[in-house]
Image 1 (cartoon, rainbow, N blue to C red):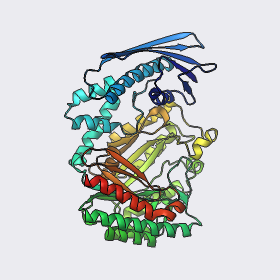
Image 2 (image 1 turned 120 degrees about the horizontal axis):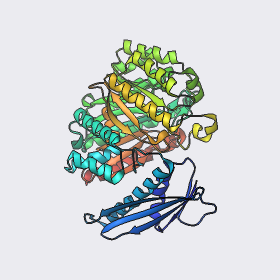
Image 3 (image 1 turned 120 degrees about the vertical axis):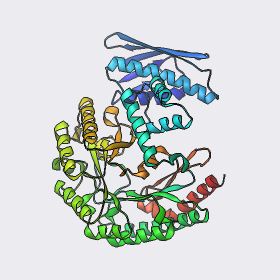
Image 4 (image 1 turned 90 degrees about the vertical axis):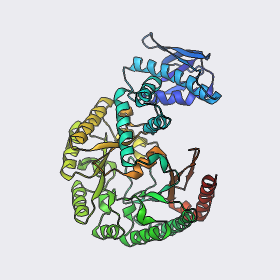
Length: 499
């Protein structure tokens, strides 16, 4: 799809219009200059006066069909030139989205939103004292979000504030993410730091030495500054890929290094790959009072697991779930993925039926995303997936099933290139929600990332401004420079929390 935009010469429109285009077309080229053999021509007539408006026409060259759209909005309330441009840009995007919806007959339930955290937008409005009804109207009128998605956002915001009533007051605490970059094998859809652990024991030893150093230094800084920890999350990779002895030493380091660990609201360890779970490792988790884990089937179709590179069986998932239950794990999360290669409604119905036999405390339903660096994206022909309509119907199946079984949605996020332009939703039984998932999604406090590939989001307690700091993704680079990364991160933390 080759699209020419006439009437706009400001390069700041390029990227947001490309993101809107990508919602409708898998492969597209958008230009503000003439290109050879365009498929569509969009002409924008923009008025930037106090009552700004944009009128746009889309000319489909193949059929000689023309669509029109218009939007007008008062700019009297803008506080800065940047805010003024943002409002005008949204007007342009509004009419552009309207044109593409007319042309393709595809309705985008999330409207103009292409970001990861839509509920953060609603939180911000409510924090400003805007009434729910007005906030909903603004989401509908300014962003073209459907009523269905607005209600989902409100349901999730209400649930989050029920689970964490002091959500808006936690800016002077932090949460900790600890990344373990090893897995038994690399899944075809994955772009996380995840290196096959077999044959890497030297790298594992070096990495854990660096991680322990980072934990001690950051823990010492937290103690010196009287900063407490809300939640701790061990992710990856698969944190249970390392040995039981290595896990034991790691959690001992956590208790010795971090302040007041006994008062941390929640500690989670991803045990997502069932083939990494053993009685010895579960014993270690019990020893350190860690009872929230993830055991992720993704699918209960054996052919699917083989196709995506997960070298465990469906039965192994079931067996390890029961083993964890028997050994005292009373808060288990499971992940399911909608739209895996070769799967449709029939296969997803089977996966939901198998999940019902286990009834984990929480369940995250992901919609498959074609991440740029994944094996699946590089070889799309090898991994056929369901069409947009069937993906939407599977998401509806998940919504109905979770409601019937007593689960409530409590967080959501979206990704680029997500099938059907839908979302990932976390559900939980009452009082079993993950506090860390709420904190990472709503960005109300600093998340300090430790370990390989861990990203820190350092939120200024007064201004809310976010500074990002990422550790390197590969173990060798991390091992070579962990002292510097630790020092640099603490320096940024000191500046933010001393202002």
